[in-house]
Length: 266
Ligand SMILES: Cc1cc2nc3c(=O)[nH]c(=O)nc-3n(C[C@H](O)[C@H](O)[C@H](O)COP(=O)(O)OP(=O)(O)OC[C@H]3O[C@@H](n4cnc5c(N)ncnc54)[C@H](O)[C@@H]3O)c2cc1C
Image (cartoon, rainbow, N blue to C red; front, side, top):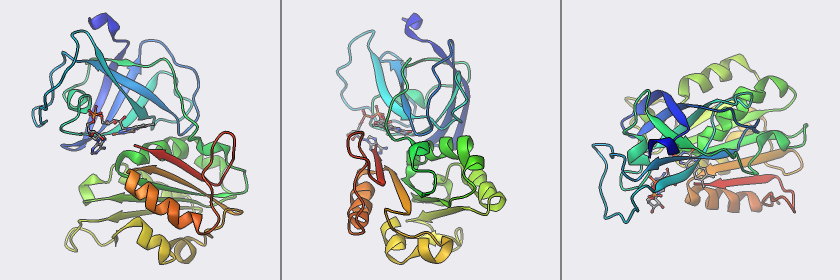
């Protein structure tokens, strides 16, 4: 059974007990990918689950590999070392098994890297606003690690929605980029934070957009001729932010019909 595996965990960094950065080395290199794309991770159904997961009745065949897609957070020059940003769905099938892995554990990683949520394909003179909830941040980390240096002529914004300060994975890296690059703006906003442990933005991403955060703080216009938006994460956030953007003439980007609003739902 173990022979179905083709990769090894090289690091597991817990941001909090239910949020982790998982670094994986594949036995064989993968093809070059583009920032924003995803691959699939998998573990055998027989693997043990994390101790704090909730076991629902599962109908899983012996020898079956449970597979799920995950966005790649690594820079796009990596072909064998991949980083993933993963949230623990305690009643889920795969994530309780992924959270039980440790350094040196083996797992399956798909040979294919897929997806049309590609951040480096926007017209070169357009600003890029990257909006995420939770682990929807992963594709933006890949983009920034790969391309921030080549995009000095435009403005780049990350708006990240989470609940508590300890849910903000990559906070240090994004703060550092914000201080190093004058064209990069990082706005984390928290729904459950208390004033004693958080002095930054609070509340819903949609409210900040409606209150003119982008125009006032970073000089970025909500205009499909000037700014591309990427939305990644919770379907409810994606739905409400995309309806807001549609009022400004934004249309969803597809292979057949290019638009300035790019969507990946988890
Ligand atoms: C293109 C793509 C990229 C993705 N990238 C990432 C990523 O980078 N990081 C990441 O953590 N996930 C990512 N996901 C989600 C991931 O594929 C799994 O769906 C998720 O990890 C849950 O898997 P599971 O087997 O544990 O739960 P499942 O057994 O598949 O689901 C159990 C239940 O939990 C619900 N559920 C699924 N996800 C969540 C969640 N986050 N919070 C609460 N409930 C949930 C499902 O709707 C379902 O009802 C991505 C999904 C897609 C489609």
